[in-house]
Picture 1 (cartoon, one colour):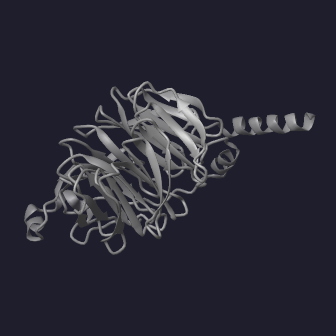
Picture 2 (picture 1 turned 180 degrees about the vertical axis):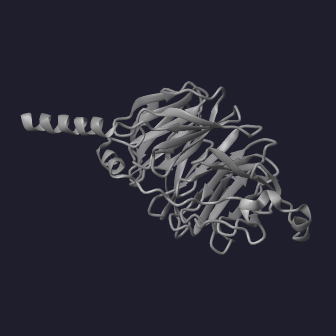
Length: 387
């Protein structure tokens, strides 16, 4: 993402711009403590990018030795500002920004600076009702949101302006997915599945209708296959090139709330109201692991980019799982109510969680020190040599 300097506003001096000048441009920008509040479809303003820090040699060494990216997570920060449950979270591809979406009467999108741990801005009245899902396209060019107001909205992260709204859904839109090349957008709702051209911002196809009450969608890492989960616990596979259904499995006994692929594309992970999380083979449909431990519906999941760990959330907090063995690693307690959304940072070292307690919380990995990592490696090497 490029550094942003609005053609009408230089963010560094935003507090000194007169209201007359703003009004003359037919846009209303409210600045307070360098936080820009965005009303409806005006756009996204007030985001600046700092130069990307280069990792030190020590950091690179530790990363190469560590078993996974998310070790001994600790609660490091809490963002406050939402007035209702935080239903969706997404990181920017460069890991510098976190975006959160509120529900109920809080149809607001908030943008957070992760380095400074401050709010960058808001998009007020982004939707008329609850925001159910958010995503930033892999190329970093678009921010997309969907809502129970039946719409899908798109903002440009290059011009920081509202682009358009898709309103062909006739019921609640609950989930979003995008192909790795950032070209095809998929929206799933209670009236089925729709495909959109994200580059030209136009509708492409409708894959399923009301007989598929879609609560979750995900696209394979190769961009060829779409998976949807419905209210009956069934997942279906769709060929994105032809739009045809190519398979389906009865995975859960109740509603599928979330779906995610592992980074290698070999496995799919689903979370359900039946209190379980399941990891199953993408090609055969065979269940590899059934993760039990939640005492109520599992609402949200997030797969670490390292492919080794999974976070799941619900009424009883956050659970961290080992995807290789299928065992529970950690339990994180910080929210005072249901955990409703989860997202891992691109480097896998930070987990963001949103809850019905209206907060967004950041959990950071406390990886081993360089000396500890080297000692661990030496121990493994010595063990092998002794054999």
